Every structure is written in C-alpha cells, then in structure tokens.
Amino acid sequence: MDFFAAYRDGLLADAYHRVPALLTGLDPAELARAGRLLANLAVDDTQATVVRVAITGHGTLSPLVPSLTAEAARHGLLLRPTVGDFGSYLTELSDPDSELYRAEAEITLCVLDAGIIFDEVPVPWRPADVRAVLDEKLAFLDKLASIFEANSKGTLVLNTLPLPHRLSAQLVDHQSRAELGALWREANARLLRFGEQHPGVLVVDLDPLLAEGIPVEDPRMAVYAKMHLSTELLARYAREIGHLARNTAGRTKKCLVLDLDGTVWGGILGEDGHDGVEVAETHHGEAFRAFQRVVKQIGAQGVLLAVVSKNDLEPVRRALTENPQMTLSENDFVRIIANWQPKHDNLKQLAADLNLGVDAFTFVDDSTLECGLVREELPGVAVLPVTGDPALHVGTLLADGWFDVRELTVEDRARVDKYREDLSRKDFLDNFDSIEQYLTELGVRVRFAPATEKELPRVSQLSLRTNQFNLTTRRLQLPEVRELAEDPAWHVLAIRSSDRFGDNGLVGVIFARRENDALHLENFILSCRVFSRGIEQACLSALLHHAREHGLTEVFGSYRPTAKNGKVADFYRRYGFTTLPGSDDGVTRFRHDLGELTEAPAHVDLDFGGTLQ
Image (cartoon, rainbow, N blue to C red; front, side, top):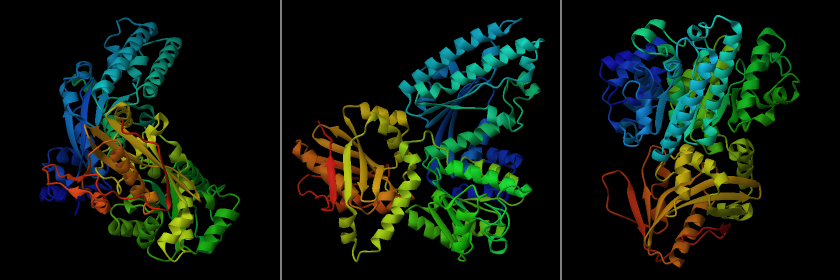
C-alpha cells in the first residue's frame, strides 16, 4: 500500500507509525503533497513522539508547515506547529509574553531573507549603505537571541541570508559588486558565529543548500506574495530542521553499518580477490575511494562503523589490511561480521554485541533484495540503498544527516575506542564461570560528583540520545542543563566510570531537586555501554545514604514509560522505593522513607563528591 492510498482509506490517523515507511522513496513533489495532507490529519499525540515547533520570520512562509510536517513524519515524529503573524519576528521574539514563547516549543524557527536588509536600504544605494543596515540588524538579532535565551528553554534557529542576483546586479560596476559580496559574506560569517556566544541558538547555513541548484526565490511570488524564499528552498530547509527535530527527540543514529561488495568497493571479493577489488585509480574505483573517505571522516567524529557482509571473514580482513589502495582499514571498524547468514540476523547480533537497539543503525547496501529484507524485518533501521552509479553513494549517505548532533563532545571523539574496550570486556567475561567473578576482576571505579561546566555538553547529549536507561526521557538542550546546574535547588550529578580496560568517560547523570526535607530524583540516565555493572546501584545507594546523613527524610523518584525504557520500569522498586498512587500524566512516582537502604555492590569502588547542602 502506498501513502496516498492509505490516506484515502483513512488508515493513517490511528496508525501513524506506518507513515515513515510509506513516505520512503517519495520524490520531492510527492513528499510536498503528502505534507499538505498530513498537516490536516487529526492524529492523537499518543500515536507518536510530538515535536513542538514555533515559526516566525520576515516573509510569507506558508509552504513551510507542510514541508516540516512531512520531514518530521519521515522520522516518526508528529509536528505540532505554532505559526506567527506575517513579518512579526521582531515583536514576537522581543516580547516574552508573545504566543511564540507561550508555545514552549523545543525548536523556534526565525526564517530570515535578504529583505530584512534591503527593505531598509535607501534608493539609490551603495555598498556602504548595505553595510550600515547589516551592522544594525545583526546587533538587533544578537539582542533578540539574548532575550530568547532568557525566556525559552528551547533552541532558536536562525539562517544565513542568501543574496539574490537581482540585488547584486543592481550595481553596474564589478568593483562595487565585489565589495557587496564581501561585506555580505562577512555578515553571514558573523551570524554563523552566534552559537559561540548563544548556546541556545543554532544557525543554518543556506549556502550549501543553494549550491545544490535550488533557486533562492520565485520572482513572482517574491513580489506578489512577499514570499522571499522559494518553495524549493523552504522544503530543503525543512529537511535540515527535520534532522534537528530527530536529534531533539533522541533519535540520532549511532552506528553506520556497511555492506562491502558493490558498496565499499567495486567488484566481488570472492571472485576478484583482496587485491582485485576496485578502490582507486579506475573510473569506478575513484568513486568508491571518495565514498570510503567520507565514511572514514564520519567515523572520526564518534560514529561507530561496522561491516555486515556476505563474505568469508579472512578475505575481508586481507582486503582491509593488505590492499595498499584501500582508504578504510580494519581498525576503522568496531565490528566486522562476514558470513553467509541473513543480514537482518547479523544486525540483531551486532546490536547485542554493542548493547544498542537496532534503531541506532543506519545500514547501507547495494542490493535491493537485502535492503528490502532488512527494512521488513527491522523497521527501526534506517536503510540506504546505493544501487547504480557509485559516484552517488556519498550523496545518499549524507542526504539525511543521520548522525547530526548539536555539538561534538570529548566522549564522541573517543567513542570507537570505548566500544572496542567494551567488546574486550565481553571477551573477558567468557573467562569466568559467574558474573560475580567477572565484575570483581573487572575493577569497576565510579566517580559521582556535580557536573563541571566542561561536562555539561555531554550531560545534555546523554539526555538527548539515551533511550533505554532513561527514567523519564526528558530531553534537555545545553541551555536547560546549564540553567539547572546553576540553580541552588538542583543537583546535576555526573557519573564517570573506568575499569581495568580503560576510562569509560561520562556515562550517566542524575538530575535531583531538593525541596525542604525531600529530594526529588527528576531523572536518572545511564549509557547502555555500562549496563549490568552495578554502577546505577552504587550511585543510588550513595545518594540515599548522603540524603539521610544530611537530615532529609524522604526521596522521590519518577518513571515515564516509553517504547524503549521498559527495562527500567521497576528500577526504583528494586531498591526499596514504594509506588505512590497513580497520576493522570502517565508518570509513575515512587517514595523511599530512608529507612532500610540499599548498599553499594562490593565490586564497585565509588568516589562520591556530591553534596545536598
């Protein structure tokens, strides 16, 4: 069944989970049509993860809501938009009581165009006149960004200003055109640096999108409808915002899984041999080398790389280690699975090995059959078919920003090594008859203390990306984390762990709030990499003991169920909390009277540096 048939038959409102698969493969025109239909579809908020987006800007933005609706739906998200009045971005962002702020949106879009400058440029004009308006407007946008950060916990998205040819061409001398181009680019560079001073602001660079051949504007719509950005550009911009919304909802992918024959290299390894596959110099070989370079670049930024290939393991290793023209090496991959089992079964095994859900995977294969099987058996996997010309592989891989994050952390850059250490731990476990012996020899060390300023980006990232051990799944952007860390009533306690195999880094966080003689555990998050090592028990025990020693009389905890955190539904009950009467918000609440307390596991060496004063 295709999307439009399902819509006509009235099947989508009560089965929104089907929409992402039905949107797969639609061309831009079909996707735009689907977005218009979805924008008018009455869907209950329980059908999907809701993302609230407030929209304001300078010109007419009517095509943006359908495009955003479709892009959110492609990632299983349900858009709830709030749209401001035409051209009202100055007043809406300036007024903390405006509807824009009352929407409490996770993402606020302020869509800008060259009109915000040229509407105020006199006629006739010279580049110096444009510079004066640019300086004034950037100063005002800087002030608006500060107001936004003071009044919203979400992210404000600005964009660079495209310069249409019809504006620069009004200068008849090339020297003046060059001067205008230079000062315009300087202004956009200043705009792109807003994020350095405003952590709550993100700036989308439109230049790379325009370089794809998208028109800046439709001249007729610009004049008659005051729509200063083309429908095509707004749709492409919406795709970028869809990636941001996916990250905000904790759905960023963590692992890139690759087929080999026809995907990473040309030819068939079993027929051409390890030194006969195409990876350089030939017509197609250069395309595969370009693809490998991009994969290597992605892997260097904390994305896990893995192989699932229908091949024998030893020839694969020889190709990756002995072929001098190969860009990727065996050491670039956290796991190589080469056998003749169904690929969806191998992906399940890989997920178990890495302690990840399969929905953390993006899978790339040149076989339509294999892609179809994986998509059918494992719908949570992002499947990227790379059939046809290998020169197009890079574009397919990068088109949807599957691994985009707001900011890279130290932990991101070290992630591959950390996962390799985890696999060594699994091998180490095989040497013991019991889990107790294994944990004793593992030598788990935990540092549990208030998060430092440098650790706050990683704390935010854990709240955004952790799904399994996340008691309430409250997603927090960096400004929200910083606000809590600076609030005397709140405690943002970071969990670091290490063992005989190395430093795991910052792997968890507890958000706690003191109220009179009670402590409220608003959320407890722990990375899947360190499950089942007693770390969560040790930290909770330390916090309960500390609370009692400092005169507190009770500790409360909360659990909000999601599709992925069911394994921690009874976490608080396991450690002496009692369940409180139910509430209407779907959250289960627990209470501990600080009588009989759970002790930390003997195998964990805990250093607790927190205080509840």
